Amino acid sequence: MANLKIKLVRGRAGKNKRQLATLDALGLTKKDKEVIKPDNPQIRGMIKKVEHLVEYEEVEE
Image 1: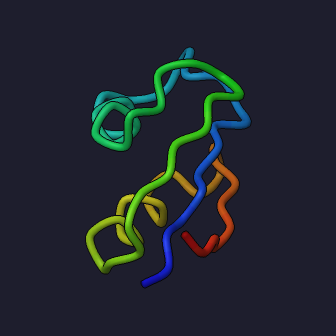
Image 2: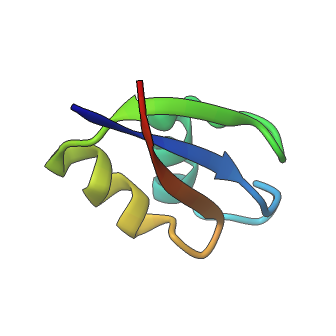
Image 3: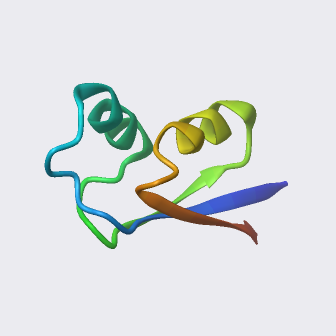
């Protein structure tokens, strides 16, 4: 099963509460932090909400 490597490329300052909550749920607390999450519809939906702040790619493990 594929995983997603997600990286926060823009800062959190000035973002609304919902975007910050989504970033917290993804585990992205600081700029340039990377996390690996399973590729499922829930994670894809979270990425969609903050896609202007993150970069992601599929990785195999």
